[in-house]
Length: 282
Image 1 (tube, rainbow, N blue to C red):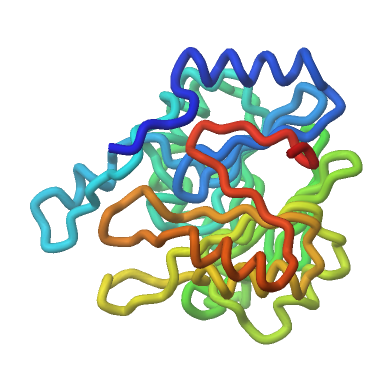
Image 2 (cartoon, helix red, strand yellow; image 1 turned 45 degrees about the vertical axis):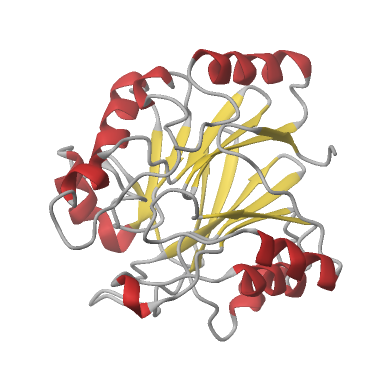
């Protein structure tokens, strides 16, 4: 089992320390899979958190066991300072009731941002009132607790829409003061993708690297070289890989990503679970 860089009390102490030491800086922690914690000026946004063993338990007796590779960074109920949380789509590692329900209980005023197309599904899974989430579709934006979120399409594996034409899979471009982050959610590259992103001047792109292997029996993502190329094509100042080292059957080695970034001259940062990066620092 891979152990996080920081875990539980040590992780929480680091979050508090970052807020005191450099409140104007943008701090980023990888929580595993596609989950990230963002801190800016004492406010906290959490992207697509998966902080449970719900999938391991669900698939334990099936032909597709989700054997966990990395220990959990922190229990969701310990995160009682979250202002905004996102879900990019309905797959459990991005919309986990065992994570989001404790988060909502610990943070009664937390804003939950979702694809509008998924509203009924989200309310049913979280057993909450249907009005609670704030829904977006591609091209729409919302201000939430000091962050501005812009929704862009994601293709997992295709650009899927509901009967009203709204996207089931989204990525989020988030502005935090002078900083701009792009969390792609789960996606492959699609025609016109870079046009959605270059106009936002992305500082940090958070991109999956586990690839698209039909033998796994799950929808696919960018692989490492594809993530590096996308970051380069949208002129991201940095790129951070994710969606690996969580489940044995659906992972990747980040070295192919790193090699591709070096070849392209694309700045990158590889984080361990629970590790903080103060954006722009070495």
